[in-house]
Length: 615
Ligand code: NDP
Image: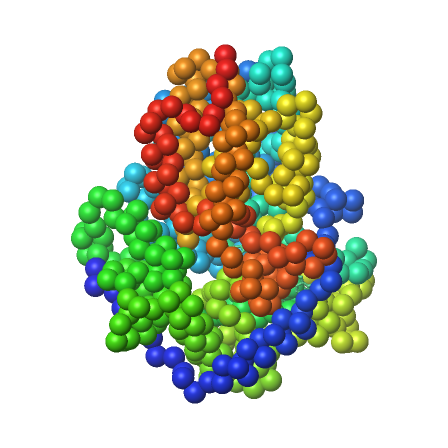
């Protein structure tokens, strides 16, 4: 149960470890997986895979006439980013808002990802936005996907966002019409929407990514990406019960957050499951307790924001001395253990940043060793257990928790196939997958291979062209790095607003980022409309100043990122001439709360400093 007393101290971690030997082992494991082509190893959803992104297995596309209209605001995306931007627009009194969404409903990742076992991976009480405003309490610490999806729909209902939304619609292009002083929004439904303001909110996890394994097109069996789960083929639903798999041999490629959750369900229902693993995830105990009503009674207004701040401090900020750890789980363990070491020093105040990082690194090695020993004690076959052990620093990949994943490898119908030596599955044939010269014949391949997160924005935005003033392409303009004011507006792209990880302060809670950005964007749009402005655009000077602020305050994580095994956190190790690129964009160094204060102070002056308004 989650209780009011749910605070905790440091954990027991092994100290009998040889850190220099482990450091060497980590470097070897990284080198083994590094591919020279970096993120270019992944297939773009074009040519043979064109149309896959727009395939919706969940909602039939209802016919409708094209829309031709003038409107105040179009929000692109109906996930948390779009919903929160639109909600704050409504709160700011802007009514003429239309969300355009590719899916058949609101929800974003929670609409598309319906695989068996889907749950939130961060504590729900922090992660799910607007809990207090909607008077909703998640049923457990890590809520099930459908519960979060329903909450997204409830946000849509609460703020009247369904009235004007269009679903099953993909935006093809955005172009600034100088004469109209509006964005022309073209779609796959032949719409011509002329929006005064546009908010881009497609989120980082919307575009499926497929590994570029030779022969993928040759496979004669069935295949699908985890975010387009084919329940017609598998049977069952997110609770499992995939009765159509009883006579099927299934391959799943990938062992990230998605795979860890659905593998136990596939193993239960399939005749045989082959798990193709390149890099193991770190998988801790889940401890997914139901929400304690007595704890809920103790909560006072503002509790969620306070909890989010506490979680952020114990994770992103390293530790929060003098504060209890309210979340108290595997995400905050490193902060807690580091804090305990610091507090045991004779003079904690004299600790240098380098000494602090040294302590944190030692605690990191110990936690990862604890997780490796957990595998050894759970998985009965020692060779399989060894393959499942993660050899990298704690935050090189997304840390995970699951109670069923590791025991799954004790089942006789499950085979773990290590593809690390060949840097991925070698080849796909008509009948199956080849690794180390052996062919694994299967009926179905499930690609749990992730999403386009750090690739070029032209590749991951899913909008064919974005043309600002004079036909300037946003993709060209940002090719060598973001150019924005506060990460949300860009010169040459008037009345266009960006959400997500550009040049903003970043919270450990993704939805908290969207809420802060949505509030700020809504303020600017509402002010512009109130003041009768038809055009809002950052000045060149203000934009240059913000870019300089970002550069001057940047926190250099490059050494850490470069030491990590490849993955989307470090742009696949930086190959392909792209270099290491953080999945968090170019963050504002002083952090999320300093960024929030800066924006609040900027708004409080009422002068819209750094923005030009015309009209
Ligand atoms: P990931 O990008 O985390 O994982 C992709 C997997 O595919 C990795 O294991 C990768 O291996 C593997 N892979 C890629 N190419 C190959 C290849 N050629 N051969 C073999 N394996 C390959 O994607 P996920 O969908 O698992 O998760 C993405 C993110 O979505 C998460 O990190 C999380 O932020 C979010 N998410 C959140 C959830 C939640 O909150 N409930 C649930 C699910 C996802 P390698 O590591 O070696 O590259």
